[in-house]
Image 1: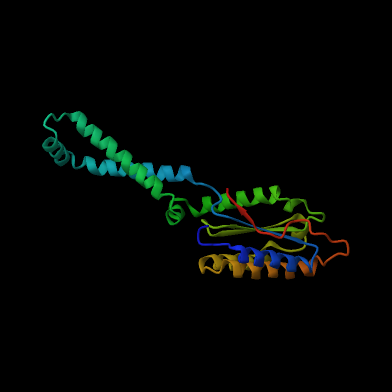
Image 2: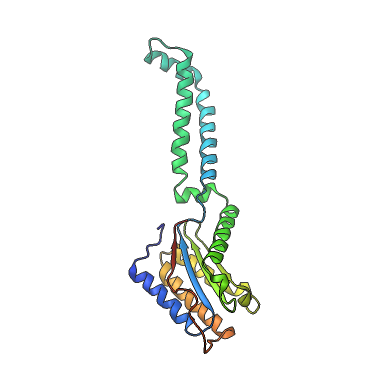
Length: 224
């Protein structure tokens, strides 16, 4: 999974960090990680087609040399061969660059940061609703959503938390996880961030006598 490998030990560390953090608060902490929040196929295709068009414009400048080369290969040369060469070679270029566009580092170049951020936000909100984080008893759920290709983290807090804690307080936690991804310390930084979330929640939402664990502690590994 991109730059992050989650083995059994790593999964256990994350789960235990969530359990410990929630033992001090009535708040609920959910975590999820996804390889990419969107497939970006349309953007990769546009990139490949534009590259193919540029290639076609360039080789058309060499019309005469290419014609002479084809004439030296085919004794029954006809202009149709030249048309086939232009069309087939352009198709090959488009195909190659379409698959190259699937490489993570090229995806981050091809797709604008604004679009990538929007797609991660949309995917995080979708998981926030589907996973039940938005349905806790006191609306005190938090989702830490990590999208690896985009190297972006969304921390979404439910309405009960937002009434007492400003969103800006979570920014340090988000930044710390992103640093962990870049420095290949994802698990360590995520565990630290979960612990910090627990400390913040404890101040505003202390544990209740009838508290129950409403969300699972394990990190969810999403496919799409």
